[in-house]
Amino acid sequence: EVYLVESGGGLVQPGGSLRLSCVASGFDFNAAWMSWIRQAPGKGLEWVGRIKSKGGGGTTDFAAPVKGRFTISRDDSKNTVYLQVNSLKTEDTGRYYCAKVYMLTALAFDHWGQGTLVSVSS
Amino acid sequence: EIVMTQSPTTLSVSPGERVTLSCRASQSVNTNLAWYQHKPGQAPRLFIYGASSRATGIPARFSGSGSGTDFTLTISSLQSEDFAVYYCQQYDNWPPYSFGQGTKLEIK
Image (cartoon, rainbow over all chains, first blue to last red; front, side, top):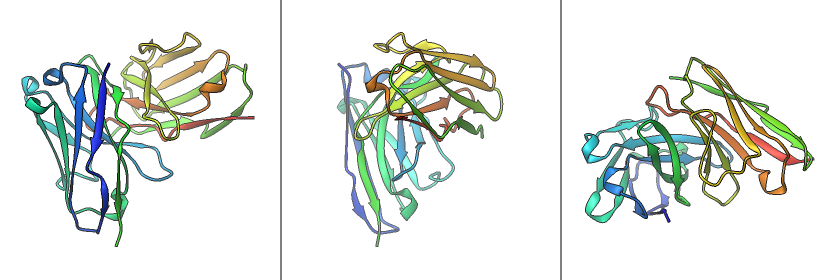
């Protein structure tokens, strides 16, 4: 069974930082591309960023609203992907989900965690 | 950036009815289109990928169709557990992997 468990969310002031973690189990994490997706209160899903597997180059891509402020990294020895969120804005408030990319020929997200809540407020 | 537009925003339906949800892309995404179900307090769940392939464990009453810019998700006979928000998402041209704004299925 695939599990993705996020943690690290919390209340932070504008301009602050957090590091979100997502621990994975039940699949070959080394080979997986992983994404972060968020949902602001009362809004829809918004893709945040993605990291490829090390074998795929390990590169990252980000959505325009977070580019330059957010980074994604992975520690395959710990089956963990991280989202470092810096220079936080009130509009970054929301639930942050990590998700596994299904396969390289179908870049949908086949497993999701329950999410971790980030609240940016003064 | 490809913009995904879903219609309608909200759909009030009765159990047992047949329902069709629409998703339109601002440019062709071929068949690189997924549908997700999202219920409050739960993780989103992949239902359809490749525009028409059901994900593991998804009941046969759900079907997806379309290619290019126009897609539909059809539920042949609504069950009580199907009331939720449904999102489409393209993965043809990325980044970003853009989502539609969602269609909420509510009980009439």
